[in-house]
Length: 191
Image 1 (tube, rainbow, N blue to C red):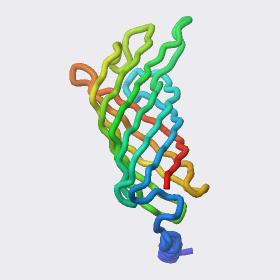
Image 2: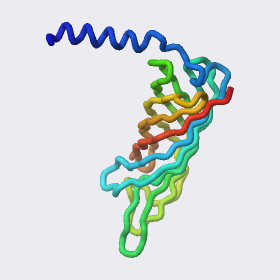
Image 3: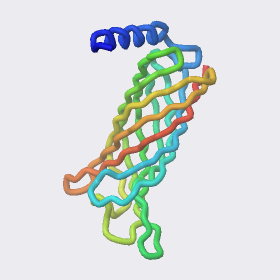
């Protein structure tokens, strides 16, 4: 198959898939509430960070339009974990963020989204040695995040989703601490 024909067939297929791309009955629409309950693998991206572990997150928001939601996100992310001697060393972070999500409907049951958030990060180190990325004490710092993902609404007002989110906040001496969260969500909307 030549390249022109492949591009033409691919374009026709995408056009057919997006023809009914308005919101489905389960997707959140203006004035509705939406909640995401997430389980994540979190990993610090600073040099010298050991393996990441797990994060639990909750995001609740109000749909301002059929595409835009604004709300609050809280979580508990263990971004670094290892065993040193007989001690399990970990660095946990509690984000409390104001978060906005913008949804793009690409099929009747499928949405992709981009998110941005800002707020505070509380560090909770339990370290046997030194610091991780400059973090060695419990502090509250201002920071933010950006992410992208998708939602699949297969059960009416419930669905599942996945997203990746990059979190960053300044820590000390102009240095920044950052981590990634790879999250799977259970999503619900209230009519």
